Image: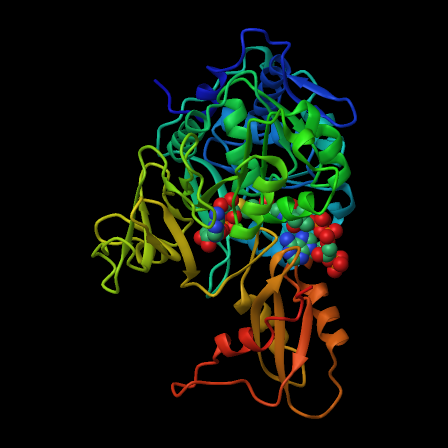
Length: 509
Ligand code: MLC
Ligand code: AMP
C-alpha cells in the first residue's frame, strides 16, 4: 500500500479518460488520460537523467498547463517539487537554490543565462526552460518517447516522504523550506474535497498563482481528488474571470479577487446564480466585503484559514452559517487551540491568545533547520502559527492579529525585516521601519519610514529603485517617508504600532 499522493489522485481519475482535467481560456484541453501519459514520460525522463526519489526539482515558470503537469510528474516519481514565485529576482532564487540543492532547475527562457550561472554556482546538474505556453527545452527533452514511459510506475512513497517544499520567509533571518509530506498533502486534499462537497461535475475557475499552497494544493487537489475539471487562467484578470464564470461551479480567491470582482457592475446575482461555492483565504476577508458580496450575489463566501506549513486548518461550514470576520472550525482530523502566555494552557471561550494547530496536515519541519523546527512546536506536538485569535461561543475561530511581524499584501506575505535590511544597506540611511497599512485593493501594503543621516542626497525614488533591483516587486513598499527619528519604547524597540497609526489613512479612498 503506497501513500503516494499521485496514487490517491489516480484512484479518482474519471472512468472516461477523455474528460478534461483542465481547459485554458484559449481553447487548450488536457484530459485525464493525457495527464497520466505525460507525467509518465516526464518522470521517466527525470529518472533517466539520474534524478532520484527525494531529490528536489526547482521550478520558476509562468503558469501553464505544463507547470501543473511538472508538479504531478514529481509527485508520481517521488521527487520533491519546489515551486518559486515568478516575481523572485536573482538574489532570491540564488538563496533558494543554494539552500535546497535541487537536482534540476526549470526556468523561463528569458532567465536561462542567469539561472545557469546560479545552477553552476550550486552544483545543480540540469537546467531546462519552459515558457508561458509550456514550450522550451524541457518539453523538447522530456517529451521524446522514452522506452520506459509506457510502463512508467507510480513510485511508492511512505506517509512521511517529501512531496513538496515551499519556502516561507521568517520574521528573522532567511526563508525556510517547509517540508510537506505525501500524508500532509493527501490528508488535507481529502478533508477539503469532502467538506466542500466536490464531485466529478464541478468546474473550478482557477485564477490563482501556482507557486503557493492556495493555488497549487487547495484548488488543484480538490479537483484532482474528485475527477473534476478546471478552467485554467494564467492569472487573475477581471475580464477573463467574467468571461469564464458561466462555465464554472466553484471559485477560489484571495480577498483582493473579491474586492476586484465587486468593483465590476457585471458581477451580480445573475452572473453568479449557477455557482455552487466561493471560498476565500490567504489573508483576512473584511466582514464588509463578505456582506457586500452576499448582498450583491446572494452567496456567502466560505472563508477558510491556512498556512504554508500546515495547509488548511479551519473553515466556515458548508451547510451552516458562514460568519463574516471568522474562519470557522477545524477541518476533519485537525485540532486547533488558543493558548495563553505559557504556550500550553488552552484559554476559555472568547479568550484571546496564540493559535496552535495539530494534525496530519502539519509539515514535517523546516528543511535542514532542526532547531528552528523545534522552536515552532510545543513539547506536546502543537505547531505555533504565529497568529493570534479567539474561539467564540459557537466554536468559530476569529483571527484578531499576528504575533509575527508580517504584512499580507494581496495574499502575498511580505516580511518587513527583509526589506528593512535592504534599505539599511543604502549609504545615507541610519535606520528604517516597514509597516503594513490598509489598502483598498491589496488589503494591506507596506510603507517604509526612513531615518537618513541628514546629508540630503536620499529621496523616495532612489530607495524604491534600489528595492526594486533587489527583491520581488510585490515586496517593495508602495511609499517611503522620511522622519527625523523613529518612535521607540523604553526598551529601545521601534514602536511600529505608532507608525501604523500615523500612516493608516494613506490609501483610504
Ligand atoms: C502585484 N503587486 C503587488 C501585489 N501583486 N503589490 C503588493 N501586493 C501584491 N499582492 C504589484 C505589481 O508588481 C505592480 O507593481 C503593482 O503591484 C500593480 O500590480 P497589478 O497589476 O495590480 O497586480 P496583479 O498582477 O493584478 O496582481 C495582483 C493579484 C496577485 C492580487 C492578482 O497579487 C495575486 O494573484 N495574488 C494572490 C496571492 C496568492 O495566491 N497567495 C496565496 C498564498 S498561500 P509595479 O511596481 O510594477 O507597479 C497562503 C496560505 C493560504 O497564504 O492560507 O492560502
Ligand atoms: P503563508 O505563510 O503565505 O502560508 O501565510 C499564512 C498566513 O496567512 C497565516 O499564518 C495567516 O496569518 C494568514 N491567513 C491565511 N488565511 C487567512 C484568513 N482567512 N484570515 C486571516 N489570515 C489568514
